[in-house]
Image (cartoon, rainbow over all chains, first blue to last red):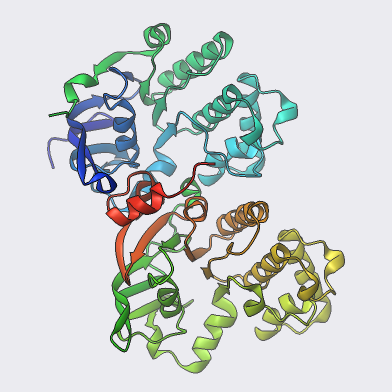
Length: 236
Length: 266
């Protein structure tokens, strides 16, 4: 163990390579030497061209992609856990209580009503169903999803509506870490503004965030710091 | 699904497999399989036909004796017991109460000629329920939970559709509030729309009842929706294991990559 870490996220020399066995074992280095920290109440925006590995880094922090080396230190439940080496059960525990993730696309479960899709993360951490639904409704209203749609599964919604449901699901929890992959990509100006407001509130609540945004205007509004990932590019 | 796993109130494994193997003559159907399953955890075993996944399920559920290794289960008194050491009465208790087994073919898990109510009630009677009214009421509420019209309670499952039969089989298994359910291709042989409904139902029941489950499936979508963890089997061995989304989004082994890349996007 190194010196006690004060950041919420501390990444040291993380690296990731894909080995494509179906393509003759080609090795695709994605990133290497990824090192940065994120403090509570801070939003770090990852910058770099498409294919530089921004989404891969978010997935490594979420424990979705397995690291080939390095360390993903996460402050969880009063201690620091290295997600690069954590057991599956510990990764699940970190996701339940500590790290929220707003992916680019909603992976909708067939037949589950929108309001329940949004409420689910709260229910999973012990909030009552009624209260979770109440809070889900507030967020959906704020994100301009008409109430008549709340009982429908989001699979039939437009891209922008699904993205807003996804955002509501990601922002509803009180997770101290939030990962945002293009949260405003398919939104109109009014809804982008709502999301910027939500991010501001999370900052004030002390949430540590890592975001990918391509829109310069949004980046200017939310970024406390920009980390350029081209320096982590592993193509060699 | 992964997000819904409840905080582990119990940090001790429910089911433990150690060095499990099964040989049929010179054929090794399962080789050196070890893992632990925790309360409330859903494990999917994926792989193609002949990979040994169904044999493994039978070993885990004490329907087959291993050629080597052992399976231990934490009984309700908290003691971890080797399944091979259980007496007949203890084994029966597990099958009737603490475990469920959902077969791919509902006809194997149901009595097709007796009423739906009796199919569910039978498991209750086996654990000592004897008040007809209570049994019928509980059976009826379980039919509702699995979305079967209670007006059909006196009909035999042979008059039911495939999807209804499978939901009835689930009700019959869950009525005794088991802690562990084994499922063998639970959505196999059903229409896609029927599968989606069944999956959603199972997903909700598993999380509401905090069930542990071992689900054998060749359908990665089923694994994605239902399970927290995946074991990929090939040639009787576990070749890759991890969190479900890790294994499906970042498969490492050649065979797992082949499986994942073989799915047609919807």
